[in-house]
Length: 182
Image (cartoon, rainbow, N blue to C red; front, side, top):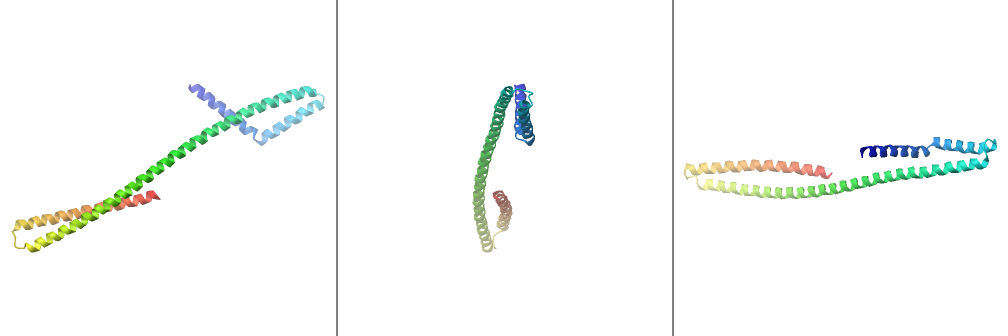
């Protein structure tokens, strides 16, 4: 199997080489000299005109047959490469569409998360206001209540820091999405 593939590759290289050579200037010169020589031989009485025409016709016919085969092999190979490229382009297009859909979904998710964070911030502000009101109303309460309030404020402050960190991450993600869209 491997040997057959190697032989096929060698034949394809030969066919490509011959096809290239036939379409070159040296080929034009060689063929022109060949035809001139063919017609000069009978004029110089070195070969009979009928024999020369028979041989010339046979050689030219065989050459045309092989050239047609070699050219068709090149066309087939080019067609296969074009089909492969078209398949690759279709796959890339599908991948790009998938990526665009993913980016849109991520953008929507980030917008929802941003809205949720804003709502949480509003809730935290409400809680802080409530704590401040409670502190003002209950100045006379015992020390344990104040300690609870301090802990609540600490938790709120900690939550604010976490929310700020989340906002920063969302902002980074939004920047990366914008860069991907470009």
